[in-house]
Amino acid sequence: MSKKYFITTYGCQLNVHESEKLAGVLKEDGYEPAQNIKDADIIIFNTCAIREGAEDRVFGNVGALKKLKKENRDKIIAVCGCMTQQKEKANKLYEMFPFVDIVFGTSNLYKFKEFLNKSTKRLLAYDENFNLIGEDMPFYRTSGENAWVNIMQGCNNFCTYCIVPYVRGRERSRKSDDILKEVKEAVNQGYKKITLLGQNVNSYGQDCGEISFSELLKKVCKIQGDFKVTFMTSHPKDLTSDVIDVIAENEKILKEIHLPVQSGSNKILEKMNRKYTVEKYLSIIDEIKKKIPNVRITTDIIVGFPGETEEDFNQTCELIKKVGYDGIFAFMYSVREGTVAEKMPNQVSFDEKNKRVNAILKLEKEIKKGKNNGNN
Image (cartoon, rainbow, N blue to C red; front, top):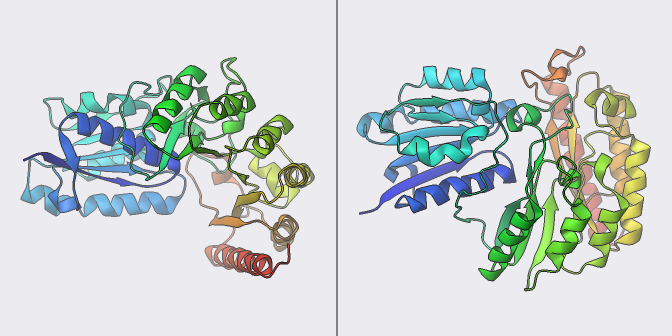
């Protein structure tokens, strides 16, 4: 009877794809997916650090595994990902839960097979070296007809609210030949949708003199086969006209762009270190709509950032109305230890943040209703 694994993934699409890599290693080692967590010989929690709630859920759900471990001492429990790339969080989890066998971060993902086969049971692996992307790791795709393809790792933007540069490192672009090879393999295997992944795909190649993101898109579109291409995520400061042109001109690229604005207030955008203004953002939106008819535009909004007044929030609502988004992912600002915003004054109360996020969701529904009624 084959050994079984169960992976729980928190967070973004990049985490989902990294869980596919962990699954690939386990499949090579003779494991098969378990239908439920109780039947698994190895349990993995791949964690997120973007918001406090995600970390709280991890601690709670890991704690619930104590009983399973007591019933079967040979069961392996591992916790990895962005949360455990933070040294203090990794140490805390390792000390709080002695029944957890392996704790490692994003920088150690490529060592998972080595960790799994170590003779000693408990292992805490922490490394600040982000140079390796794990190019040779196998993966077991689990997202239907969609194939995730990493084109880069890390982020150089250091938005004041965001922990990502600290848990993913600085930007590192994959070689375009490796990316194109992976896309070709996925297409040949029958995948109909290719999603290019990166914290900021628009800055692809800037760290190593590789081809630009627009040039990479062109090369992907030249690959033979019946498939569509999309990507995430874009940063407005790096979305250039040549990228918009490539999307407009290539039938293989889905006419959808996720362009996080985060706030409609220039004051808040500056405090967030977003490096663009509302006016610049709206000019990009105008260019997109002119060049790509019927484009689908979605965004991220953070409400309740430190110092956000009612007027700042109203400006965000006005921007949303001007753009008329096809989808909005609205979040309450969450304090992240180690970020600049953590120490900013005038933190907004939970009740106020909750009120504002609900107002955004209500506005989104009104916009969708108007579009459905033909009011574009």
